[in-house]
Image (cartoon, rainbow, N blue to C red; front, side, top):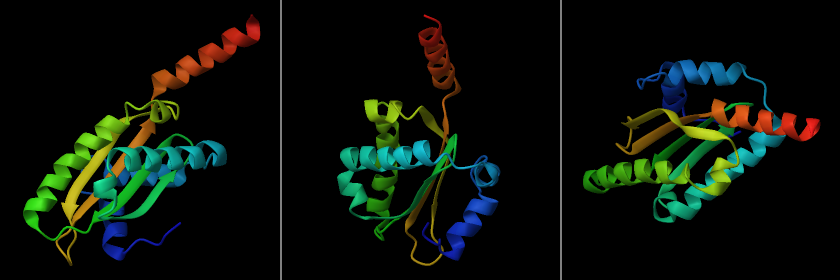
Amino acid sequence: MVVLPAFLQKRLETGQGPGIAQFHAEMSREPRDPVWAAATEYQIQAALQELAPDIIGRMHLYQTTCASTMCEMVAVLDDLDPAQASKDIEDWQTRIHQASGLDNWKATGLGPSVALELSVDPEGHRPVFIIQFRKDVSSRDKSLANRARLTRG
């Protein structure tokens, strides 16, 4: 895992967005499912590369980390122009929403983002994204029901 700059680590631990710090603490305690986590981290990045290559090219993606049922993405855009940064923030939100509709994203079981913080870094005034996701309980229940049906029948 990449070591986060101090200001980003502080944001995760004291997050200003709804539930950022609570989610981060909960995810830090959750054991890592090595198969699901690695596959999901890859799918998140692949989906965003497919839908937002222009933004990804101007972004420093510090981490996309998953545990057993939760994922977190931390990134900083390289935009210093406030007009472009504002546009990129809007585009990023739209593309995250679009990514959650892709088949490869749906296959991970992740629901839409549960917590999102969009802010500006203290040094360069660049947009900072902290996005957190949780497995969709209904998709887990459907998967378990399908497995049970297959093993009985």
